[in-house]
Length: 237
Image 1 (spheres, helix red, strand yellow):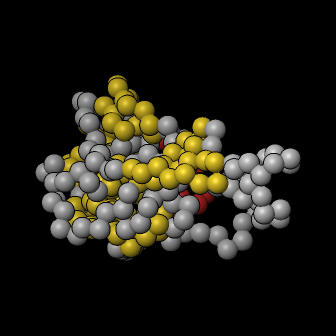
Image 2 (cartoon, helix red, strand yellow):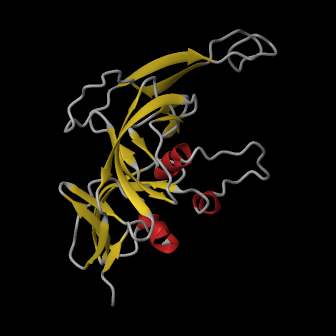
């Protein structure tokens, strides 16, 4: 490979380190087993990219998502996020039919149709230590002078989330033939090189790696940060 260095600033690219904390109970369906809907403290990078870019449809034609077409229109692309110290709470609920005003599937008796949802508890403190793992940690690549927002909404109920940003100064991507371990979860579709080992997280729309060892790929290093340059970003610059 002739050029093993990419100056992202010269390509109109800025990189930010984000620490996100939810101000309300965060809920989305990481998994559904019977009537138990569970939220695990990881956020897919597609969901983050949509939220950071304020990208949504007023009218949508069809019944299948168009992730790759949408992501190429966005000027902010995020890595997956993880909160290593998040606490959760389980809430029971009963579903009521609005037409019959009854609960349950039985037509003979009004039997409660009980279910459970597992939420990620909110965080209200604003003075959490920089090195704390109570935040959702991730990185964002910003193109065309895009500025990442300080407040977004996530999850099925539009949970309000605040983000504290730190810009990675003078980001330079270098091609590394030796194994490295990114300081963030990794979407396998963002990897161009070889993956030696990984810790899988199963979550819609597709699984990603909580941790991974990668080689023969592009990486941005600065202090404690080790950021994989996503394949989609490489294509766009």
